[in-house]
Every structure is written in C-alpha cells, then in structure tokens.
Amino acid sequence: MPDPIFEDARLAPLYDPFDPDRSDLDAYVEIARTSGARRVLDLGCGTGTLAVRLADEGCDVVGIDPAGASIDVARGKSGADAVRWVVGTAEDAPTGWADLAVMTANVAQVFLTDDHWSATLKDLRRALVPGGLLAFETRRPETRAWESWAQRYAPTTLDVPGVGEVTQAYSLTDVALPLVSFRLTHTFHATGEVITSDSTLRFRDRTEVEADLLGVGLDVEDVRDAPDRPGREHVFLARSRPWSVRPADADDAGHLWRALAHAAGWRSGDVPVAGLRDDDALARYVDGWTPDQGGVVAVDDDGTVLGAAWLRLMPAVRPGYGFVAEDVPELSMGVEPPARGGGVGSALLAVLLERARRDGRRAVSLSVERDNSTARRLYERAGFVRIGGAGGADTLLREL
Ligand SMILES: C[S@@+](CC[C@H](N)C(=O)[O-])C[C@H]1O[C@@H](n2cnc3c(N)ncnc32)[C@H](O)[C@@H]1O
Image 1 (cartoon, rainbow, N blue to C red):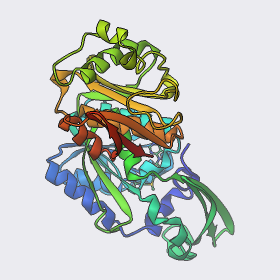
Image 2: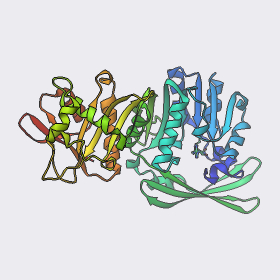
Image 3: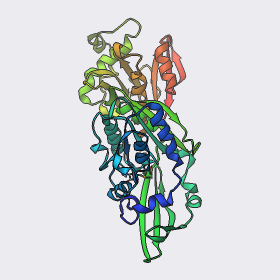
Image 4: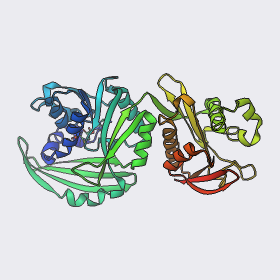
C-alpha cells in the first residue's frame, strides 16, 4: 500500500510542485542513452517525469506504480500517451522485455522487508532481457540523511494552480535503524483541510545491496555517486546473468559433498565423494550440517548446480582445520570446474557472508592451503585476513 503522499488524490498532484528540480533524473537519461536502451521499465514511476522524458527520447517505456493517483497525474502530462502506464508493482512487469529497468528517487527504500526487496529484485531481473541493465539509487545510511531533513524540509507554502495555497510541513517521527519514519502535513488554505502522510524508508548499505543483487542473478557492474548528490547516494548498475544464488536446504547435502570434493581436491582434481565420507576430518564439514548454520547454492536458470558455499559450527573437541571458536562458523566452498572464473565463487561468498551477518554471526573463519593462490585471492577480496596457520595451511577470519 503506497503512502498517502503518492496515493491520495489530493496529495499526489502536489508531488511535482513541491519537488520541481528534477535534475536528479538527468543521470538516468544518460544511462539510457549510453546503454543504448530501447525498452525501459520505470518501476515506482510516480508522477511519470522520467518515463515521459525517456519516451520523448524515443524509448518504448512502461511506467509502473501502485499509486493510482500518481499515475493519474502522469497521464495528464504532455507526451504521456507514448508511455504504457500500469497501476501495479514489479509483479506486473512484462517478462523478458526491458533492456533497462530503473527505480529513481529512492524507490528502492520503500521495500521495508528483506522478502519484499528480494521479490522485487527477482521480478525486475525477470522483466529484463538476458544481459539487461538495472539502475537505481539508495541513500547511504552512513550519511544519516534524516538528521538534516528538518532543515532541508522547512515548512513551505506554495500557490498550486487549481488548488490554491498549500503549506507542507515535515517532521521526523521515528528512527529505528535501518528504518526511518517521517510525517508530511499539508494544510490547504482555501478549505482549511489538513492531510497527513506517514512514510517509512529502509536504509541499506552498499555491501548489503550488492549481496542482494548478486543473489538474485544481477552482476554488479558499477556503484557510483549520484552526480547531483555527491557522497550521499549509491547508484547501482547491475546486469542480468543466467544464474543466481539461493539458500541451501537439507536436500542440498549431495551438492555440499560434491563442492567439498572440489575444495579438497583443488590440487589434484576431484577427491571421490565416497573417499571423503571415510575421512572423518573432512566429512565433518558436511556431516551434521543443518540449513540454520547457513549455506547457499549457485544454480543456473536451467536448474544445474554450479557450486555451493556453507558454514559449519564445530565444537572445540572436534574442530575443523580453520577452527577459531565454537560460535564462529567455518566456511567451505566449491565451484564446478566449467563454472569457474565467471564470478560464481565471489557471488557465493558475498551472499553467504551477508546472510551470516543478518543471522547475527560475529565472524566466519576458514582454512586455506598456503599455495592455493586462486582461493586465497578470492577470500582476501571478500575481506578475510590471516590470523594464524599450521603446517601448509592458513586460518583466515572475516569479521562481520
Ligand atoms: C519518492 S517516489 C519516486 C517517484 C518517481 N520514481 C520519481 O522519480 O519521482 C516513490 C514511489 O514509489 C512508489 N511505490 C511505493 N510502493 C511501491 C511498490 N511496492 N512497488 C513499486 N513502487 C512503489 C510510490 O507510489 C512512489 O510513486
């Protein structure tokens, strides 16, 4: 259910008058131009300013927004007939249609739960052609934008054509990070009517968003500044690819064994899974694993498993090679040989580490042989640091 500010028929027509400077949209027009996009999906298009501009540039545009009152404002704009308007959500996006999908003006922050956000990203990826681009922005939580909103949104009175004088006043109502809530109060002077609109936004950091994109099958191509708001926003450009990363469940144990065989046999080729099961020091990495400890599987769009990564909590009396503490799980991973070198390993790692962070884990450890330089590079890029070692192997730790 969109906020009244977008959904209420008396408030939606105020959106453009109270926010007339849309130079923030120039960057998206530029992305459409440079990517050569012909078909553009504008999710959360609101009053349609960008959709109309892109149609004017010659793009075929679908503008989707659940707020019918905002779409009504959009439909009234000059050039609006060239856009296909849909009152709906990402679920209503056409499949395999768009070269480019966009969410402008922080639409990404309206999805408050992980499930809603992830389902929306999956729908956006479904809406893209293979190799299509998703571009959107989100405010950086570390800049704590809400602390300066009271100053930026001081009460303002405008004479709105056809409505008369309206005063818009802002107040911060709650900060319960990662959620921030605020209220906009509109006073219509001609009638004395006062209408409030309450909104809540979710702030996600860069690592979190990157992991979510990688998980749903979108490669992060670039993370840039919004040119008009340097240092305050992240603009993500992510490209659709034909595989994704999903949580591992109890039925995935066979895939974990296979991945363990690839990991254990990195030097010489595969170690047979049967041999692994007899090797107690290795078998413990899968024996006793349960989905709540954490695990992810990379799967291509045909359902073929490309690799797996998982966490194993071990007791001090029966530790793994990279044991650090009973509450620090040890990570294992393996990628099928034909899928190597294509980003599967780094996507598995990013998604698994982000899930572990959300599960409240403080750190993750692993053991890697000193001369396994490919694996070491992968782990170091993901933020693991060496904390010890024995024999020919090092123990690495990644704090979360
Ligand atoms: C800040 S406005 C941005 C509008 C427009 N993109 C712009 O640049 O002006 C946020 C928009 O997100 C829309 N929205 C809210 N919930 C949504 C959902 N579940 N799916 C898509 N859009 C949603 C709102 O209706 C609103 O139009």
